[in-house]
Length: 264
Image 1 (cartoon, rainbow, N blue to C red):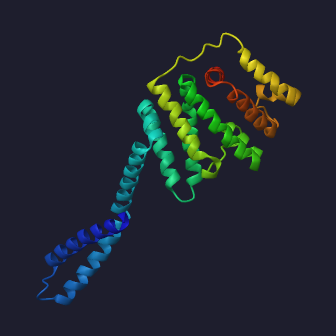
Image 2 (cartoon, one colour; image 1 turned 90 degrees about the horizontal axis):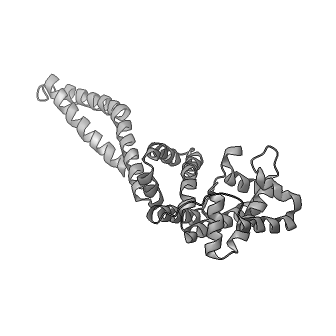
Image 3 (cartoon, one colour; image 1 turned 120 degrees about the vertical axis):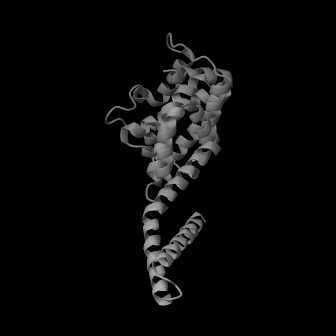
């Protein structure tokens, strides 16, 4: 629709310009043939020039407007931008890339990476309910990824190691985005004080001990999950089981343990 309107406006303006210039140079009554030829020539040249110069600027303006409106309407991005104004320009660039054919996956990955950079600042301040819901959705997504390809699961957890894993609706992306929004909303509206890590958490130690009975020494990979040559499938499986064990606790206790984990 925008392209139709743009072409129509350019055609109208160029036609008016061609008529004015042609009449200034040739009398249409005395030389109607020359007048029509000159007007047609001026119209074609002017339309081509406008299409090469003005149209790209108009498209860029329209794209910038659409991106700005999208960021304002999206509940998660509007919250993040209100709290992190410096995120606007890189997020706009990432959204623009996500809208370009052939660049969509890279753009979406850039968007998720930007959100991931600021999410850790909200997790320790979110409510128990928001934290538990986020980790529950995260665990479901990790299970889905691991069942198809453990490497995608690992790359989602540690995108800086070997690049991000692209997610879609079938991977629970929409539900995870809602859970992230719940974390941000909770941290901004009713912020809790992050836990001070003065020592180990006894409940978390119990959880790790239960994992050790199942995995043995393999549980140690969680200490250095980004180490070169690490078994990515084991890291993914242990991460899923770790979160699942924590989620089996009562909500308040699970929230406290998760806050302890995310306060690192």
